[in-house]
Length: 296
Image (cartoon, rainbow, N blue to C red; front, top):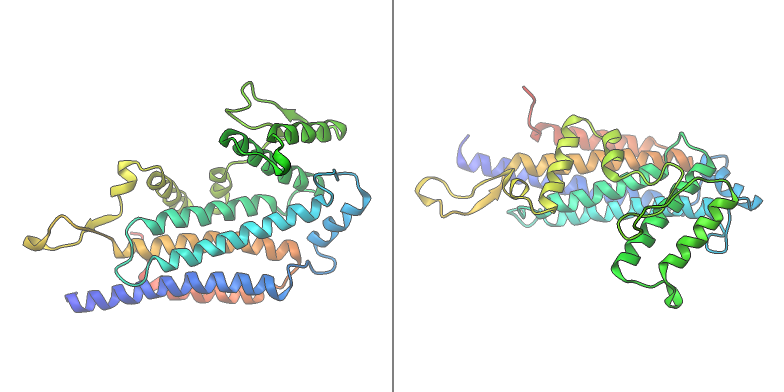
């Protein structure tokens, strides 16, 4: 392929990635805004939020547990969408940045994974609230390790004890670590980490890609140098590097597919029509397919 033709293909590849990422973020935000974030009548989300009225799981720090769990999942989806947009913005103007797309894609994947875990269609209202509280316990643990205080200057450990008392009253198993600064308190089965959730959402290629993104985020040498190539050619090579073109579209496609898997769970839980999203997903796959590496 001549240099000019290769450059034209690369430009189209990058633009396709940008348009898919930007468009997907906009699609998700518009869908949620159109419904005002409100579940449809008769949906699983609406039934669980209505279950808050019986007061069996509420607490002074959590007056509407079902509402809070679903609202948190929606926030995570919107956060992932915002990262898709950020991912797009480090691809243009050309040339794309080398490492930033993968670390931003990782953040999108992890936010989507957390949302997907909360939106699991196979669990009950009680289990969903417990998962939400486990996420809260994890946040309190991180706040305590960082030396942060809650509103009013309260120690996060005080809220942890309030949660433990809440769980004990409802016969929810509590797991306490030997060292509360090394790991968080957990309820029931505990908080599933993002890697395990993503293993359920990704194929083998996607799992490998996520681990490569994590290697880069952790500043390992393999993560830093994988998926790049010399920027120059022959005698003109001055030690500069660039991201491989196929990596640009592959990373974008991975972030896109995982996000759509999580977003589809939101649609199902809230009882919103999946038709527009299914059409958008198909159109994006068709646009990206010509640029994706073909398996042998």
